[in-house]
Length: 297
Image (cartoon, rainbow, N blue to C red; front, top):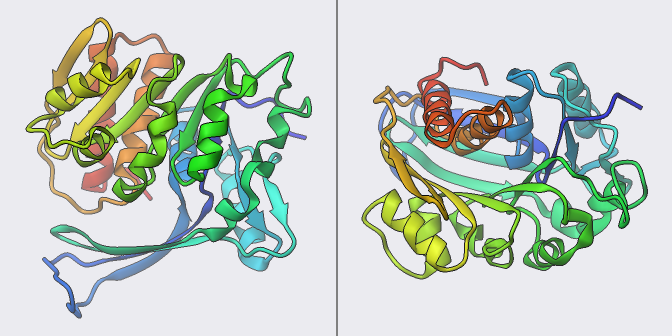
């Protein structure tokens, strides 16, 4: 068993197959580009960024006992991720995600991530059996939680004493899964990371800016929210007020994983004691560097 982790990342752990082309694309485009396979999933992307910043993250997810699963675990352990707490399934395959990106952003994506939903709360066993915590002594550190979990499981987490002492950092997996986070919206220990579209889905409204969206989420009971809006100003909303920061303008070379990088960098900055404005600026800088290709996939 590895040394104790600094933070837990709960959610999707899979292979990303990403095709990228340096030109604008549309439905039906057939262009030259590059196709890469790399570790991915929201929880995984966050964990990899945390490891790059010097933290020791553990991933709680599911993975098949197939060749792809063994290769994925070995790859992640070489990056410094703790994989000891993964639920290994004998009859479910390792999940995969496939996306196509052009110079104009994400064109299309398919998530073949049915195993995570199928195993349900089995991935949370280490939080209850004493390895990472228990009902009487719950995990008291930070937890990054992603919206690839089922709505029922996220609802159970919102009410579970296993999470009562944690610093919960929550992100939807995609706009299509944003409403799964509703049970955690008003959680007293949760910080939500969403983009403008996801904020609109949570509030059943449309917003002109990240700051406006942050105000609306706070009005709906959120304790803390971070709202991004692409190249426009991002906002950090808390009960002390809403602050904004404008990201640097960069050449976009990739988009998959940018929001996860933002969340991880923000969490690292706050763990290290940065005030709100400084942490928001650091997260936007890290995301900009990732989008521009300065940070390796």
